[in-house]
View 1 (cartoon, rainbow, N blue to C red):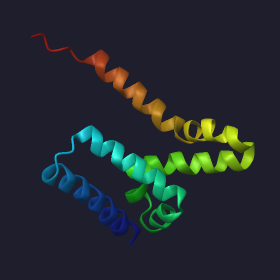
View 2: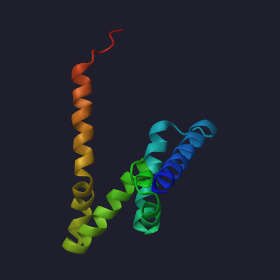
View 3: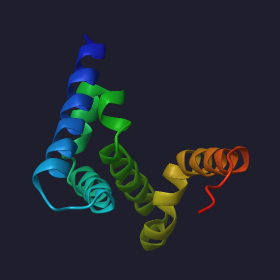
Length: 117
C-alpha cells in the first residue's frame, strides 16, 4: 500500500504543477521556487512531516520535499547550535542532493556538444 500512497501523492503534486503551468502565467522557474518555498513553510509548520509519513518518497522526491528537507535541517541545527544553525542546517541536510545534481550536470555538459547558431 505504501507504493500506492507514494504514487498518488507524487502524482497529485505533479498535477498541481501542471495546472499552474497550464492555467496561470507563472513561468517554470517561478513555479519551482513556489514549490520549494511551500515545502519550507509546510515543513517548518510541521504539516509536511505528516505527508512524508503517509507517502514516503512520493512526498520527499518532488521539489516540495527539497524545501521540507531544508526546513528540517535548519530546525535540527538550530536546536543544536542556536541561531548559527539557520545558516548551516539547510545546506548540511541537502548537501548530498546538491552534490549529485552538480556532478551529473557537469557530466552531462562534458558529454554533450553545444548547439552552434
